[in-house]
Image (cartoon, rainbow, N blue to C red):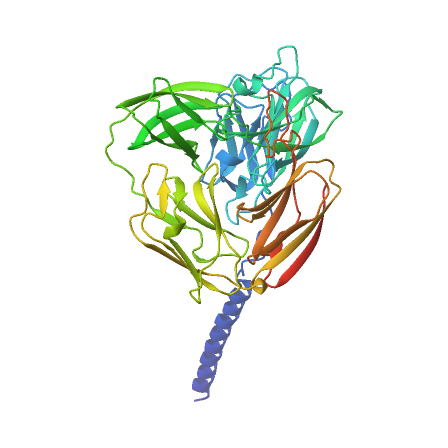
Amino acid sequence: MHQNVLMKDRFFIRVLLFILSIVFLAECAKRGRPEGGPKDEDAPIMVTAKPPHFTTNFREKEIKIYFDEYIKLKDLQTQLVVSPPLKYQPIIVPQGTPSKYISIKILDTLKSNTTYTFNFGESVIDNTEGNILHNFKYVFSTGDIIDSLKVNGTVKDAFEREADKNITVMLYEFNKEFTDSIIYKEKPLYVANTLDTTAWEITNIKEGKYLLVGLKDVAKNYLFNPKNDKIGFVKEVISVPKDTSYTLNLFEETLPFKLQRVAEAKKNKMLIGYEGEIDSIKIEPLFGPDDFESITLFEKTKDTANVWFKGSVADSLLFRVKTGNVIDTAKVMLRSKEIDSLQISINAKGVLNLRDHIKIAGNIPLQSIDTSKVYFVDKDTLKVPYSYQLKKEKTEAFVEIDFDKKYNDKYNLTLYPDAVTDFLGNANKDTLNFNFTTKKPTDYGNLYLTLQNVKSYPIIVQLITEKGELIEEVYATEQQEYNFTNLPPTKYLVRVIYDDNKNKKRDAGNFLQKIQPEKVIYYPTVLDIRANWDMSETFLLE
């Protein structure tokens, strides 16, 4: 019996030891289980390259760059900048798939004694966390030395408040073969890109003299196309390393007038498409009729002129187009029998702001108004005294009605049949009713502006919305105060334009003529105009 007890004790001991060993192993396993560790926030590191970074006397057709972890290339097409530019884009892998190296296969014949830079921008990222290897470059030289000089700077827009992104900055070598036309037909010697900033830097430049140009290069071909590209340039040839930092003001050149197309739109109306910027067009028939008349209005957003005409015109019209000193001829076939019906609208849609006049406009330019067929009353049905003017601007011809506005009042403007007549002799056929109200002065804000440090006069002072819509413009030939009153509450911008040539408008520059655009300066902050609030600001011009 003693033996049986002893055997049972040994059995229980063995079971207990077995259970304890399992618990111990489980605890060990639990304590040893990885928790993931801290998040990887380190960018990839280049380990080596074949041929090595900064290789001289480079003769290879393929480059391999190795990293300490798996990487991917993101947005390579927009991020990679090769300087000098290559005629044929190199084959670069991988793109979109992870790898521990980048392969670059060069398809061009490289220039002799030239330092090349492959700037990958922000395109190299690690495969797991997406950490960016900022401004990663691979540099080599086909000559005995690596050029190490550099120039840098910023870009601005010569007219808009914010500069465009992805501006290409270029250097052309100033040598005996240099002509200004080089920017239209040859790629530059060195390039850089602002990417998503306004800063740029061109590195690994050799000593010399250069033309410095910035382009909003729409075609991405390193060539200036005035029809599509913005340009900025330094007027004088720059010297490297003497000069190092520059600001480029980009602008759209004003193209000379060029007739593009002519087409009939409706009966007694044709469209003239053109290139360039113009203020007016004069239409002159080459062979009568003697009673020919026309009126032209320009589209606001397209290079198109709408021309309405009348007279004893047959089935075609051969005419001369004159704008300034430019004369062209065109012919339009007249086949349409469809005539536009007159449609009337006014600008007072619900509310007429205290600073505005009533503007009656039509889809065909208005030419007369019969006041005996106009009924204008306030909320008490009392007749409202008013005056009117027939006005023609670049984009519209209309009737402007002015009257003494009562605050917080309601008005009704009724146009009875035949009240207004357009250029073609059409009149409104129906009775038209327009109802609108006015607000109190306390519903508006006022801006009182003082300018300091004005370098020269005349200047153009503009109040615009954040979207660039012009609210009011003042042309000043001497020092004065600028009072913008009865402004609807919203956010506004102020800009000042130096009118150097005194033609009362802002002029762009011209590269071939080495003319910089007229200077535009924005007030540095957005002005938040509030109701029943007067704002006084002093604008210190740079």
